[in-house]
Image 1 (cartoon, protein in one colour):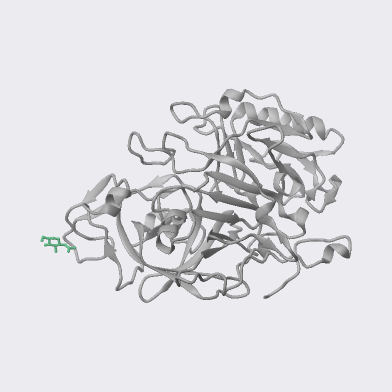
Image 2 (cartoon, protein in one colour; image 1 turned 60 degrees about the horizontal axis):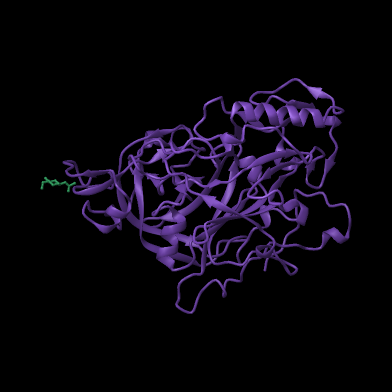
Length: 440
Ligand SMILES: *[C@@H]1O[C@H](CO)[C@@H](O)[C@H](O)[C@H]1NC(C)=O
């Protein structure tokens, strides 16, 4: 077991130096007696230039490394099949196949007269891969190929598990514009049938759930799919201390291209209120419900760098936060933020800048996701410290979009079988972080 200290953490007491390594399962326990893995994983790191969370996996024959952006939305994995896609093992998903029906495919490519390639096939099911960062979509063939994922990681990737015919969509080179440098596609973590959580669960016969730990820097975190106990050493089992809230299904698709009647593939939760420093912020709570047209509600998004709030909610939260921090010297606003402080005048704590908590109140007053300074404040280059929420306008499709920054160094478990989200609040309280997220 590799152990390492917490480089990003300033720990005050020696007792706190107790090694709390985020250890999940040992490599031997990761393999079931049936031979399949009980969990597989994707590493995650943050691309500083774009603030996207990127991952790396191996695909094709011979196996080639593919860098892609993590997305809690989207319909399935898509990669650029036009440039540099070399493989002897890809196969089309035929139009009349079960996979094509399950993919809810809106199209079928009947003929292509060029030389056969992943992008040029006859009788092939089609999908609409979307760059959810730029909101650009295109049509592309749905095909299968070998996908290889590690069953352990850090300090080095361990034994791999291989899915021989993993279903994904062929994107185009132009679709990768706006993604982190070197990324040639997007990994979908959504609730869709062929997104990674469900497709990996059916391939490897483990549970339809995954745990996400997003890192605040390039240091790293990860996504663990399947059945893994979230155990911290020594003896702290994080899976027993998560707080749960139901995952809600928006009955109307929130994707760029959809068919009438499609549900949204994204993850919504039932936010019922927001508190700042323990005090309820007055909000138009109608905005927090998802209406019949699919408008409103609260979702989680890894492609939104910061939490985006509908205009009236943004104003109410910003005003409440300003009122609770009247004694901290302000700094001029730094776009896209509205409320900034002189960073040198804000104290620091183990859980980030010393500022009031923001509570996302869920199904009951006692169930809330408490957000501390590390997840609410953003340090700007000029030395200002800003409240990291942005104004989403007065008619957004979704009223509250919880963005990447607010999820960093939190453990989130998306359980599609129980339809619930488990959350830890900041791991910094437990003297660990996503860089210590490991399996084996
Ligand atoms: C598709 O079918 C047509 C007609 O049979 C054939 O000419 C063409 O080469 C095929 N295309 C591919 C990519 O196999």
